[in-house]
Length: 169
Image 1 (tube, helix red, strand yellow):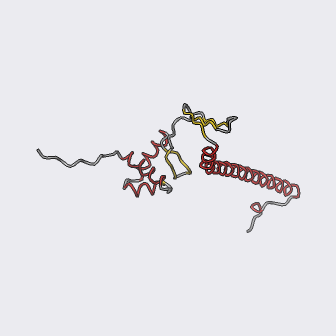
Image 2 (cartoon, helix red, strand yellow; image 1 turned 120 degrees about the horizontal axis):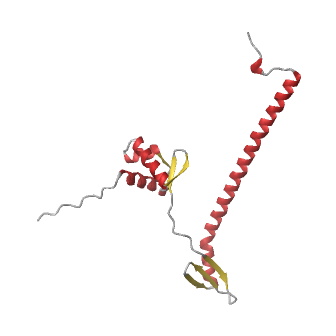
Image 3 (tube, helix red, strand yellow; image 1 turned 180 degrees about the horizontal axis):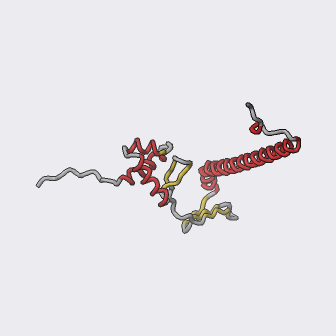
C-alpha cells in the first residue's frame, strides 16, 4: 500500500483574496485593489467582484474609495464593573466573571489599561478635530458663496458687467 503525500488545502479565490486583505491589515499595510491583484495574481475584475461581495456581506469595509479593510468580528460586549470596596479591595466584574483585587493588583491593572485609555482619548480628540475642521470648511464655503452673491448684486446695481460678459473682439 502506497501513501500519497497530503495535498495542500485548496481555498477558493474569494478566501485567498480575503486572507490577503487580512494579512495586509495585520501587517499595517493598506489593502488596495492593485496590491491585492499583485499579491494574489488574480485579475482586477476577479478581485473587484470578490471585494464587492465581501463589502455587501459585511466582511470588509471601505476606508476610502479603493481602500478596504476586514471588519473585525468581536464577541458580544459584556457588562464591566470596577468598584472600590470599603476595605480598600477592588471588585472587578466582566460578564459572569468576578475577581477581587488587592490595591496593588488594582494599580497594576490600571497601569496596563492606561495606554488603552489614552488611545481612546486620542481617537475621540481626532474625531472631534475632524468634525470641527469639516464645520469650518462648510462655513468657509457658505461665506464664499454669500460673498459672490453680494459682489454680483453690487456689480448689477452699478451696471458693471461680469468678466465673462465683456466681449473682446
